[in-house]
Structure formats: C-alpha cells, structure tokens
Length: 212
Image: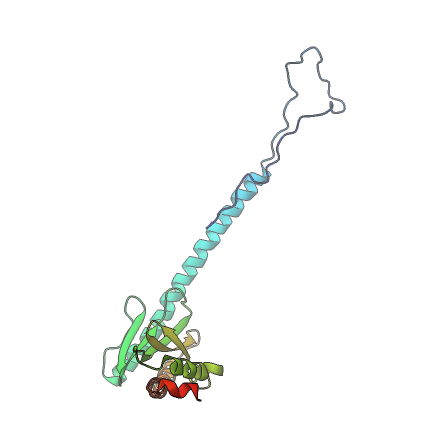
C-alpha cells in the first residue's frame, strides 16, 4: 500500500523582507539572523494519525473478512456434511474451502473462496475442446446460452484454457440447507443439458457453419 508522505504539507521558513512591527533588529550585529519561525507540527501529527487510522482500519477489515470467511465456510460445510449423510458419502470442505463430488460424468466443485468470503461458488467442466472440434460453433452456442442466462438457469459459461466451465454463485448470508440442496440439484441438471448441447456443437462439420 502506498503511504502518504508525512511532511508533504510542511511549510518552509521564508526570509523576512522587513522587520515585523514592534520588533527591534540590532543593526550593529549584522551577523545575527532574525530567529526562524517555529515550524508547524500539526501536519506531522495529523499525518501520523491518518496513517495509524488507515492501518487500524485495514487490520479491522482483515479481521472482519477472516471471521466472515470462517463463519461462512462453517455454514456451508455443515450443509454439505448433512447432504453427504443423506447421500451416503463423505462430503465436506477441505482446508482451502473446497469440496468435490462426482455426478454422472462431471466433478462438481463447491467453494467458499478466501478472496470472496461472502459467496459460495458451484462449478464444473461441461466440455473439453479438442484440436479438431468445431470451436466456433461451441463459442457461438456458449454465447447464446449465456445471453440473459436463460439457457443456463442463472449460471455462467466461461472458457479456461481448453475447458468450458459452468459456474453458479450464491450469497452465503441467509443461505439455508434447502437453498443449497436446490441449487445443487438445478446445477447438476443444467450441467447435463449444457454438456449435451455443447458435445453436439463440437461435432458439427466446420463447413456447415459458413452456410448457416
């Protein structure tokens, strides 16, 4: 963090052009200069106080974010463990705030990230691009599905390397077990539907696109 200079606004003494009223200056002692005015220290104190306040506020924000992260991860972890008991599998967040579980051909990831502690993310890869696939057809379909998110039920498609990922986010504040359960059910269904459409698009002959 860039810190402000504490002495930026400090006034510099100026040579007096004339003797101030009611002040005697000895002409016989020319080697003695008039006393320099006292430099103001208010700017120093104000700057130091401002710097301390900024540091304190930063520490308070970091503490609040840390506490919120722990609290939100604890809530999501509790819901996942309860869901895992129903599904008959071990399901919980790891030390990085992530949980994985398989669904059909997908690996579903649930995450409460450190850099965004107020949100729970659910994501999975729905298509992997190969060299001979019709990349243009896939991108056009992904843009169509992303438009107003009507084709993804509120989720978003994104490209990362050679992977097309589907991602959904939900605020942790006010999140209940039923909410998370519904989100995961809708998300897994959407992932299967989007995957089927993308797999069809990737196999389209590239020449067909130019005549469409």
